[in-house]
Amino acid sequence: MKPEWLERDNIVRKKGISVEEFVMNFEEPNKPVLLEGCIDNWAALQKWDKDYLVSVCGDVKFAAGPVEMRLQEYFRYSDQVREERPEDLFSVLGNERPDYRWVIIGPAGSGSSFHIDPNSTSAWNAVIKGSKKWVLFPPDVIPPGVYPSPDGAEVACPVSIIEWFMNFYGATKNLKRRPIECICKAGEVIFVPNGWWHLVINLEESIAITQNYVSRRNLLNVLDFLKRPNAGELVSGTRDRVNLHDKFENAVESTFPGTIDRLVQKAEEKRAQGKKPSFWDSVTDSHAGAFKFSF
Ligand SMILES: O=C(O)CCC(=O)C(=O)O
Image (tube, rainbow, N blue to C red; front, side):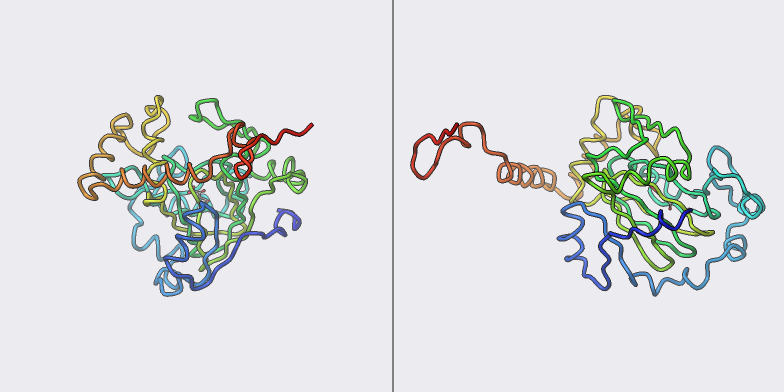
C-alpha cells in the first residue's frame, strides 16, 4: 500500500457517545462513524491472538473463501502466503436467522473488495488486532471500477484490491462525491450504514469481529429488500430465501405489534416533508397567490 492511499482520513470519530447520540447523528441519517474506546473492556483485546484462538477452537472448520479449513491449517497458510489475493477466514454463527456474525482473520494485504452488506443490513466491525484501511461510498454512488448487475445480484470488480488502488484510487480525489475513508485500528469500531459500498484491506495481520443487524432504522429497507422479485438470488445467509420476508415480517409483528405500521407512517411523513415542490408549487408564490414566472 502506498502512503498516499492511506493518508486521507475523513470519517467522523467519536469517543464516549451515548446510544441516543449514535442513533440520532449516525444511524438515523445512515452515515458512517468510527467509535473510539468503546470496546476497551472486551477481554478479547487482551486475550485474542492466533495461539489463543487455536487453543479454543482448533477443531472447528471455518470458511476460508471457497474452502473449509481448521484454524491451524489456515494460519499455516496465512503465515507464509505472499499472493496478492489471499482469502479471509469467516466464522458464521447462528442458525435461525440469516448469517450475521463473523470473525474475520487475515494477513496483511487480505481484505474485502467493494460490496454492499447482505440483505440491506447495517453493520459494525471491531478490530481486535491489527488495522484496516476502509474506503466507503454512499449507496447512490457506484465506486469507480465496480460493475453491479442491473438486478444487484452480482458485483463485478475486475481487479484485486491492490489493483483497485493502483488504477482507481488516485481519481477519487477529483470526484464530486469523494469517499469516506479511515484506518480503523485495534480497539476501534466502525459503523457501516446499510447500502454503503465498502472496500477493506488489512494493513497488517488482523483479527476483527463484525455483526450485521436490523434495527428500527433500517427495518423497512430490509423488508423491502427481502420482498424483491429476485429475492431467490439476492437474499443471502439462509436457505429459505424466498420466504424470509414473510417469516421476518410476521415475527416482528408478533413481537413488536404495530411497529411496522408506525415506521411506514413515519417514513411517509418524512417523505412528505422532504418532498420537492411540484412544478406548480415552484411557480406559484404562495404568499401572493400569483404566478411568478420569469424569463
Ligand atoms: O474486515 C473486513 O475485512 C471487512 C468485512 C466486511 O466488509 C464485511 O463484513 O462486510
